[in-house]
Length: 248
Image (tube, rainbow, N blue to C red):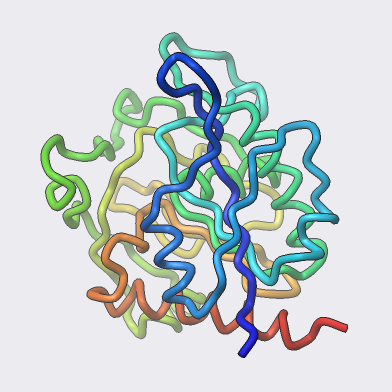
């Protein structure tokens, strides 16, 4: 039986002081499989990226989290000292997001992927949330993976929004592993979830032809043990399968 192909863009990092690697954390691959898809890793091709060619071969796009941040010039901000950027990923994902939405390819953005979708639609980011007055410190706690990915705060879900309909609830407990976040929401994006400090932590693309949703937290972490996360990936997988079946 054919499976919907879920494309996962890679990060491009210089490792071992020797060469570049294109890589994706395994938990995203497992979540794509759990959604019923066949994961396909997309290299961070940079300016050589051909979005329409890539999207002709996938039924969905999963944008992952990463330790790297989007280069701030993409949203009109100045560089900050010590920032870890991945320009080849930016040059791959930002046009890929816009093309996927235009072509009706389902998209799910997580953490950095959430921020990529916002920037792709003209939104801006806070580069250091913990320095913003009134904002929580959204960075992860130091320790084991269980400590880092433990629940950190509630999010309030928009009544009758997509996340509300998927979860059947108006609030959810989520983890928090990010230092950047939305300052202004991109054009055509609609907020779906807020943190207690008012930070937007979920949105959908309002007029998208298919599933197009992003969250700031990490639902892929042990998603099978979390009914909300499982519902999110199930809905994404169903949209990818619908796209596969609708192919000529």
